[in-house]
Length: 270
Image (cartoon, rainbow, N blue to C red; front, top):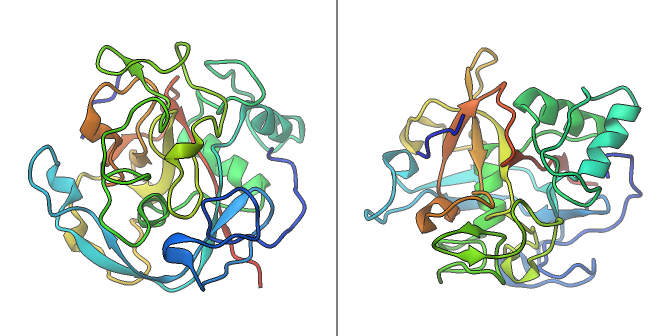
């Protein structure tokens, strides 16, 4: 576990498919034949039994094991990109979100400096919710045992926004505008799920492994939890294994940080 360093306006509905391509009418990868209808700007994730965690021992934390198969009984949708500064400010103007100053200004940059409660409120304004840990990891990994959203090869600048001595500079200091690394798309078409900013998920986090969760629609529910899950790695990560789809962290729910943002999940359309 990594040690902590101390447009949301309604959008038109459309048919969304679990696809790597931005266009809504393409199917590829593990989603073939399983159409999930989503609102515009979201990618469809099919229901099914999916692998979570890892069996690899080197450079993996105990909370990523054991690798288990979990069943998600309902398809769902996930924002293709992280929620932007401009989208969050629309929620503020509507009176549904607390005013927060992002660490990096720019309407198309990912919103940062938001606590877990801020992210939860913003997703509710959009008609969604924060994804569970298992939903997030499945959307990033697909149906196979890949290490990163784009596969098993080491990340570099075309695939993720990274910054540090190991990587060199993949752009300016701080995150990039959302969707700037299309080569790093997940099998279902979600972008920036490794690098750019960390993302809040709904689950409480206590550092325990996958062993104690129910096999069907798992979620760690604790309204009083001090720590909440974060996933995905950020622009300032300088360690390869911290960008893996199975890497897990837990941050204080009231933390606001320059590396921390979110995306929302939604019910699939009928």
